[in-house]
Amino acid sequence: MNAGAGFRNWPLGTGCRALLAGTSLLAVTACGTEQPARPEAARSAAGLALPFDAYKTTPEQRATLGDAHNLLVAQCMRERGVTVEPPAEDAALIAALDPGNSRRYGVADTEAAGRYGYHLARPPSPDTTAAWTAGLSAATRHHLYGTGERRGCLDRASLVLERGARKADWPWLSRQDALTLEQSAKAPEVVAAAGRWRACMTGAGHAYPSPEAAITDSRWNLDERAVTEDEKRTAVADTRCKWSSGLVAAWHAADAELQRALVRDNAARFAALRADLAYRLRRASAVLAAHEGGQVG
Image (cartoon, rainbow, N blue to C red; front, side, top):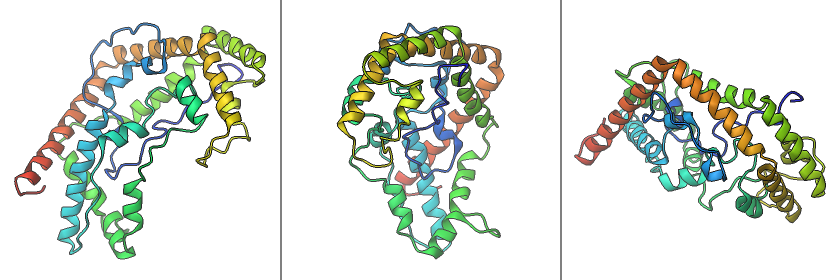
C-alpha cells in the first residue's frame, strides 16, 4: 500500500447479484477486439471504460445465460421427480446491482456518493434467487446442489451449456483484471495524484492517509442500509478530491495501458475467451428458443 495509491484491489464483481447460473462466464463477454482502442481521458465515473470490458457480459447477456441455466435446472429437477420454478433473471436489476468500473478506484461518482455515501446503491427489489433457494426443502436442495455421490442439477445445467465449448482460461482473465488494478496503483503519476488527494481531503476536513482508509472508516457500517449524513459528506468530498487531484484519471489511464498491453500480447488467449463465451451464448439462446417452442434442453 505504501508504494501505491493506498487502495487495495476492489473486489471483482462488487455489488453484483450471485446469479443462479453457476458459471465463471457471468463476468465476461464475447465482443472483444484484437487491438482495443485507446480511450480518451476519463472525465466522469460513467466514462471509466477499460479494454477488458470487451470481455465482460452485458446485463442482457447475463440474463440470457441465467435464464437458460434456470430452465435446464428445472428440467434436471423434473427428471429427479422434483418440480421447481427458479425466478427469471432481470437484466435491469442486474445492471442496477452492478457498479461496473464506477467503483474500481473507490467511490468516483459524486451524485451517487451524495445519495449512498460509501454504500453500494441497492434497488428496492429483493434478491429473488437467494430468497427462492432459502425456501426450498433440504431434500430439494440436495438435488439442486448435489452430494458427494451425485452431481447436483446446478452443475449439470452448467455442463449442458458448456458442452462442446472451446476451453478458455477465465480465471486467468480475473487474475489479470486484479493485477492491472494493483500494479497501476504503483505508477508514479498515480502515487503523485494520491498525494494530492490526501492534501485535498485534509483541506476539506477529512484527514485520511488513503482512499481505502476513508471507505473503511469504522464510523460507516456498510452492512447496514442506513447511510449517515456524515458518511455522505465524506464520500462526496472523497469523489471531488479524486477528480480534482487527477487520481481517478491517472489511475484509469495507467490501468488501461496495462490492459491494452495484455490484450495485445495474449491475442490467442483473448480469442479463446471470446470464442468460448460466444458459443455458450448461442447454446443459451438455443435452450430458450427450444423452451418457447415447447421443448427444454
